[in-house]
Amino acid sequence: AQTVTQSQPEMSVQEAETVTLSCTYDTSESDYYLFWYKQPPSRQMILVIRQEAYKQQNATENRFSVNFQKAAKSFSLKISDSQLGDAAMYFCAYRRTQGGSEKLVFGKGTKLTVNP
Amino acid sequence: ETGVTQTPRHLVMGMTNKKSLKCEQHLGHNAMYWYKQSAKKPLELMFVYNFKEQTENNSVPSRFSPECPNSSHLFLHLHTLQPEDSALYLCASSLFQGSGADTQYFGPGTRLTVL
Image 1 (tube, helix red, strand yellow):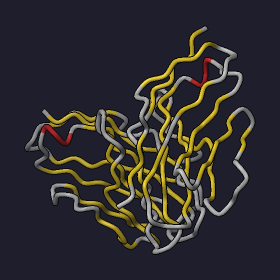
Image 2 (cartoon, rainbow over the protein chains, first blue to last red; image 1 turned 60 degrees about the horizontal axis):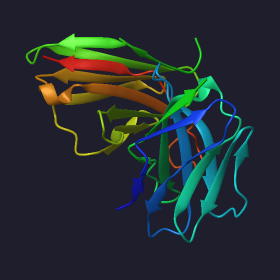
Image 3 (cartoon, helix red, strand yellow; image 1 turned 135 degrees about the vertical axis):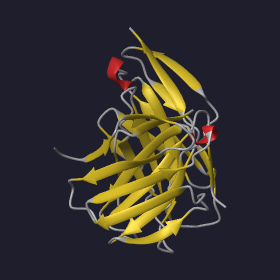
Image 4 (cartoon, each protein chain N blue to C red; image 1 turned 90 degrees about the horizontal axis):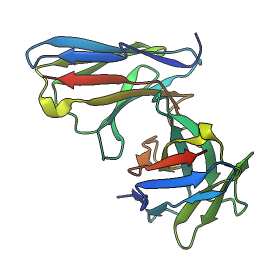
């Protein structure tokens, strides 16, 4: 069974600085998708960024980028120029591409605090 | 309204009560999901509906009963719950199940407390 591990329960960063959140996963599949979701204190979970495993190029969305290391099964999220609004729980998630199941496997999350 | 909405946002119920959670999506999606989010645990998928048909039940106790009357609405009927069922229940939707890189969009959740 696939598992997702986020080894940092909490992280903090100064406003305008850069922070990296770690995520590792375990799978025997060769093709899959990886996601980072953000859940602010208001609780609405929103997608931050998505990576297809077959793509070698790391995904980027404005200040958010990933470092996808397929061989190491690592998928870290880098937040540049951190803003107060980035404070939230961040969840790493995995989903297989075949088999019809849309089951997202989530990590336990990392709570990010942004200090002014 | 846009996106995925859930009502109520907060619910307190006794173990003998019967209540229902409602989810509505305004995105034109055909797949809907129920997740349970407990403190210090990963999100757990409970049920999946694709074009109104249940396609996944992740070994959920029968005291949770889902209903999907159409692609826009999803309910979770609750009866004789236990205190350990207290959690945040999240609804999500996506274009349709099995569509590859399809993204799931989440609602704000219902915070359930079982006394």
